[in-house]
Length: 319
Ligand code: NAP
Image (tube, rainbow, N blue to C red; front, side, top):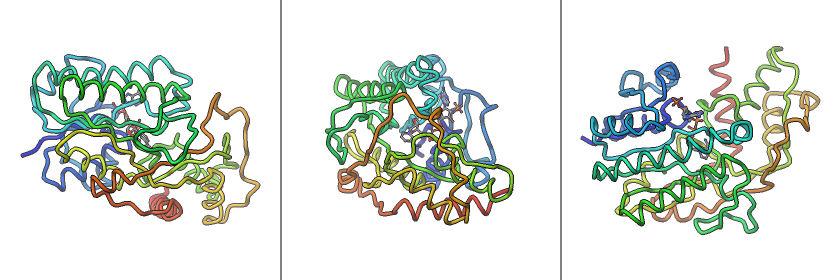
């Protein structure tokens, strides 16, 4: 039986990936920094409660990783654990860069020293391309990170490639563009827009307060993106793949769409300069043709379709 470890099991992607791996017959070991962080409701929501082995593992602690690897000898390790908020990374640059780079270094160094043939998936991010001059972004677009988060993901990306090239360790970078779902935490833009709009509709909030919404991003649907993660580790050789929808939309369009759907008046939107980031990317979208061709990954949802799904899921579960 195949065993897979997933770090960041308490995040958005971890539970969706676990569900997919369980359906493929894997034993899934979910890693968290602390049991206290585990929200079992997310597992219940996906009908996988009780099916994942949860282990405490601090990825900054080399010996914790070694213990997990010796105990399970996993065939696959999905490294999703990270301080993943761009905004937060400006508040906590040192913590973000330290955690997001050293975690992968510890995992790969442990695999190397233990001489395991564990395949590693590194959750890279489109943010590392940053100041792009040519769109769409492809696997060969130069990196120009614009935030501490982006710097951390760019470093981890190169750490993965270095272990692949120097030690023949199977480490694949899945370069993820923004992807959303019901399990997204409320500090991320799309979830915040939908949740706050529902709160406004129910009289629990007065306004939706946002920063710069005249920027464009490439958004997709998390349950589909985790499939690309899994597919990327089923290939003979490790590689790097852009995982995206292929088009970008203005953040303002997302708000307009959700407000229209929920019949929220436009004057409930407040644009606050205080919430602008020190640096921001104006437009970013990727080219997913390599992932589609080599991984046979299928993705064709428009983000408006995804938004309809997300709003209806949120409405069903609104308390
Ligand atoms: P997420 O919801 O933010 O979850 C990440 C998990 O990482 C957390 O649940 C947390 O789990 C762990 N973690 C470790 N150190 C942390 C720290 N210092 N602060 C906060 N959390 C920390 O992430 P996700 O959306 O599932 O994304 C999965 C991976 O894909 C991440 O590496 C992210 O950077 C990358 N990515 C995501 C997107 C996206 O749109 N979602 C786009 C590009 C890349 P414990 O507390 O249980 O340890």
